[in-house]
Picture 1 (cartoon, rainbow, N blue to C red):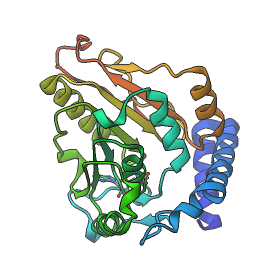
Picture 2 (picture 1 turned 30 degrees about the vertical axis):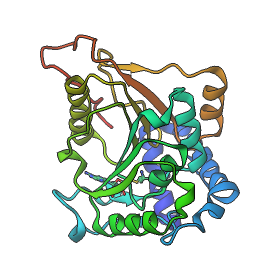
Picture 3 (picture 1 turned 120 degrees about the vertical axis):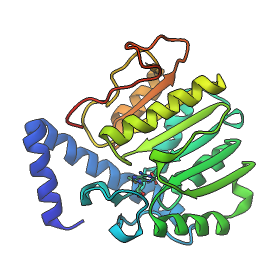
Length: 263
Ligand SMILES: C[S@@+](CC[C@H](N)C(=O)[O-])C[C@H]1O[C@@H](n2cnc3c(N)ncnc32)[C@H](O)[C@@H]1O
């Protein structure tokens, strides 16, 4: 990333969160670099299109409306932090479908397939990234993948209907605000339709977790060692929610969820 872009980001963070925000941003970047250097860089070599380089999605290749440039940045989530997040759920992956909302070049799809999720789906609206993910999946050493099905889907996540059956949905900075609200609403409503177990793993840069309707989203309590690892060694805060469809929504609209303003 260019020094000017880093300076802009730091200034923006200072305006939002003051000196503490800047300090967190610096730690986050240092941890991201450490994960890349010590763990991810070697695993990238198994991929035809290496997933580490950042990419700004062109307006022309998008499905649906075009968000601001800062919301079109692709960057991958660290693999180790992803594994810690899944382990902390204490589930048997073979009993769950995994959906990466905004799946980019497919790094997390491959990681989820290696962890043994029954079915692994990625939603990606940028054509280039989707096509690179398809190549990465096709060329990956197949003996490492323990899944019945793995696919990148070229779709706008806002228009997607989640499949039935137990589900883990993963979000790493795809979008915020109304788009996030809409997708999580669909996730809750599809859980009502299929009466299943569903979890959300949510990671983003700084800020507070964006969900506040505690009626259906139960903040999942992590065990001590998982919490310690994720709090101290993850470059990004990771929040995990269990969707509890037996809970009554706080307002009259079933399955509603409201995002905090300013996110
Ligand atoms: C920060 S990247 C995360 C990539 C991937 N989850 C990973 O960790 O390797 C966010 C991705 O979300 C995608 N995205 C953003 N809005 C989307 C939408 N409405 N539908 C589908 N994908 C979207 C972007 O193109 C980008 O690839």
